Each structure stands twice: as C-alpha cells, then as structure tokens.
Image (cartoon, rainbow, N blue to C red; front, side, top):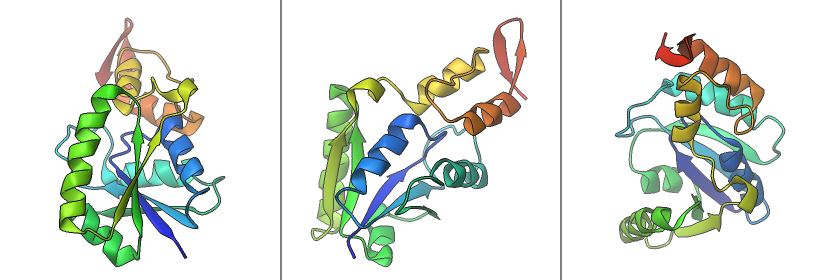
Length: 167
C-alpha cells in the first residue's frame, strides 16, 4: 500500500487543500492529511478544532485520512509507513519555500519522495490566511471553504460595523 502524507497547519482547511488531497489519491492508495500541532504561526483554531474541521471536510473523500503530529514531518511519515510527502504549489513565491523544505526533508530521509501538485487553476488564489482575513473583516468566505468551516469562522469572530474582532 502506497501511503502519502499531506502535512500542513490547515488553519482552516480550504477547497484548495481538499483538491490537492483528492488528486493525490489518484497517485497513492492512502493520503493522510497531517495536522502539525506546533507550527510557528499565529493560529486561529486549536489543534483539536483543526482536526475536527478537517475530519468533517474529508468525510466524502475516500482514502483520505486525518492525523496529527508534533515532531519532524519525516519522522511522522516514517512511522506511518509513507513513501511520499505531498505538497501543493499555488504561486511562484510558494516554490522557493517548498523547494527549500523538500531539500531539508530529503536530507533527513532520502527515501521519502516529495510530490508537488500544482493548485488547480480555479483554486490557486485560495489560502488559509486570505480566508481568515475575509472572515475577520466580516464576510463569509463561502466560496473558499465548506459551510461547516464558515460556521466555525463566524464563531471565532464577532462582527461589529463591518470589522471583525476575535470573540
């Protein structure tokens, strides 16, 4: 069985993330969307919230699973028996970051392949940070995320006069 790990913070998961995961199942028997629980980012959702939102989002995607991890991605991949890491590439500016990360991961485990999937043309503009900003400014980002995530975003933000503030 060929297993791939699709790591990320998924804060929140977007249609672009789900598209990459679904397309990765064409290449691998199982794709594990792995929520990193200690990213060096200012997160909106807790690890438990991100896991719950992601579980619901992938419910209709056969062969896509959800897990969490806190150590090195390559160590988690090895423990899961994965043969590859899956990454999504939206823009040219993403390339340098992804390239450097791939080089580091391949140095740490040269048997683990890194597979980069280009974002689908109609989804390449979607990012979690843009979704958070849209929601924080008082608009539902329904075009970019499943409805249960819109609901979770509403619960995180209190809208006053068009400006969003954290609850």
